[in-house]
Image (tube, rainbow, N blue to C red; front, side, top):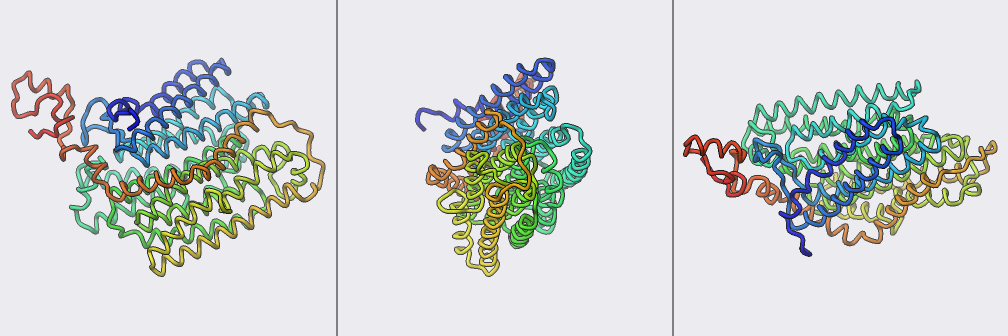
Length: 538
């Protein structure tokens, strides 16, 4: 593929995890030097983004698999870069880099009152590494490790500044996150007890061999854990109370990435481990109620941060809708919508941070006249807001149109109900957005806004994401083709399984162990490297 060989880039698979972790350690060592910390963070995340783009191109030819420590799966942990994981990795890397630049500019303007750099940079980099690890891992327990990495960092980030409101909201967030982690860990333990493995490629056929009732219980437990992390109904109540209290860059990266990691985990496990679709009806109802309850909550809000937080919950329902359809078209539209939503939702929270800075509040009753005071800010809010509402021809419309077409193609009464629910949700999203626009930008302000100059770095990074979100419309054709190919491989996981376990390999020895066995004369063990390349059996 254009001169790129899969083996040439296999070594690069762990870099999106390793680079931020190494940079986090270096940033912590240089905690007294704020400028050095910022430079290290920017360089590390830029390199991660470049690596992600290269992996995205290479993975289109097939999954790239790296056995960590040369221990072959399923005994060892492997990192798998396929179409889905590299797309998520690329979008998340771009978002985290833009948010980092925004936070650096905010830190300079505020003299780091809200984001103390000695704390912020190491934890932010660990969060980035945790997200990358969750996307790349081919092991269920390592997925748990990825979740814990990003959650541990998020516990620190959500309470930056130490105000009473943030500590209270952070406490709720920590308790709920720990509950979901305990449920996830318990589910992993039961999966291992039932199948003897936590390698997802091996689980794809071992779960099909156990009692169907046991398999369904395991599936529901994993969905429950991921549902809390993704903030689906009725497990979303923690999100609107937690996210609006954090600093703008923290809220933006949380909204863009943390819930999407939960959605990604649902996509991966539903297609690879539980492809029989027995939970699809449940997921359809969850998607429908999540869309409607979330958007009704948004309509009722009079604070723009809380309104955007409720729209975040609502639009998770669209992604679950595509998963529940269990079709190529549904999955393709869902993956496309995830990529779109990460970009647009992050952008909106960054722009709302600028609105709060310029207008002095996030309450729609206190804001007003911003279109006259800051016309560029008005445009920066309008474009992603219309994209979120699904106005043609923006990417939000294209993703929703794909989901509607997939629902109609399904033809079941519940699918048609979901289509209607999706249309209603889109219209109510438009209503909530127009209400916010009218009050914050168009109507006169009840009081004169403070004379505040917006830092160029904050405006520039947010504007870059606005352009990126709008550009998704220009590349929608190639992007949708890519998500369609990703959906086809998700629905037919044999390519993934073969890449991780070539030849049905399942003994999982390392090259070092095999060499020791050869030297000791144990001829019943395969020759060195056979388990890594030939699928040899003892």
